[in-house]
Length: 423
Image (cartoon, rainbow, N blue to C red; front, side, top):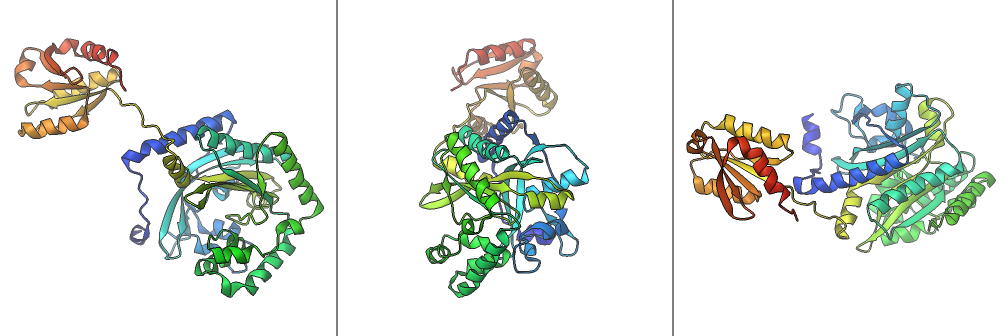
């Protein structure tokens, strides 16, 4: 396990940022509830064999999925979860969930192995509709993603849609694409050389201008679609247009993994001259049928938390939460712990937020710490006042202090809170 710790890329979410993540998660959960999706939480530790079987199976390199997986100790067959869709399907299978249609979403960390063999942690949320091949479902999952972004006040994105074909028509395209890549292999950048072995479709994701110019000459998958797949894409376009949804047809729409069929889509936004992918997804009937060991249709999408947070920060969408009314409890002598906790307990029963200071003989230090917390009220407990059954209460907003009977402290603080407008 020490090897994992030494190779992980630090991705801590610090207290000043956690509220932003909570805000986004709350919006997502509210939206998912609106669309009648249920949350699922799959294990972070997964079988490496599971992903070796289903990731990147259009790659010409054998066992290419191992390049993505981070084995826990180099001996066991366990890896950290690299993505959500396969784990959701596997959970349905192993828990013998046989609902006619499952509408599920997940939120959590995913882990990928980088080129330098270090472990990278990302965060995703995703939605899956499993058990329907209706074209209506394709539109619904896209509308769901749009609703999430709208609720987060993210606009000016571009919806790109395309088709990944089916097992009958795509095979010829894959052959032609691999042939094209081999003929230009020496012209691609080192990053593309690495990615191509994982997934030939990733050549369309490189932002290197030279690589883009080469890939723009590659075969277009729409030229290889069969009649049914071509008709499916046209019907989807018509449905979205009738709903007033703006989109573009992307001839070289890349996919993160190769388990999609027919509808694929992504949401892209321009940030500082670069494209940021907010979410991507599509239909994955082949994958669902393979994992669940029966014919099943499915569609879904996943979205990148880090990208969403960054876009919202850059656009000043986040609003700092309002300050909470806080009471600071300060013991002015040692051995007053029981009194401190009793006062804190009474505050909590009245839903008052508290901060407890530890006693120190350095009064100036305590004063500095108290000022840093910026509490509206400071309750100071001293031996002398306790003997009189009182506490010293300082109202920092009015710069006023007075002794208050211990029995009246709850009502006294509530009165201050009600008369205070928190900005």
